[in-house]
Length: 108
Image 1 (cartoon, helix red, strand yellow):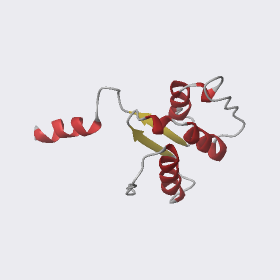
Image 2 (tube, rainbow, N blue to C red):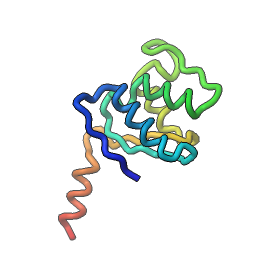
Image 3 (cartoon, helix red, strand yellow):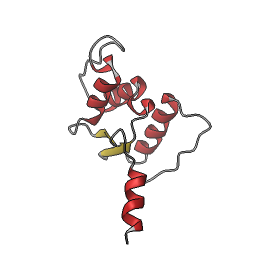
Image 4 (cartoon, rainbow, N blue to C red):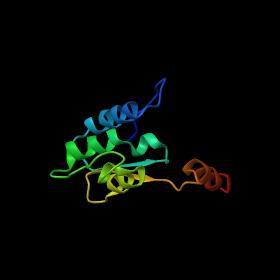
């Protein structure tokens, strides 16, 4: 399922709102989002949304200091967790799924 997302800005709050809007179309479904490594895709706001909405009893810690919120890497690990109903899978740092798709389609 896809939902267009066009916005004048690309802040972490913009991305969280887009994810919320998409998830609201089927709130009981399991969701896997495929994203690049942009910092807004591993943000504190996104980790808080997933934790508060769909993962009970998790201690997030303090951004830049402790726990899940400590770093982008720790947030990405939390957001990637396959046990979560909403999870995020990240493309490799020096790769793009668009390039891969182009390579596959040009060889047809």
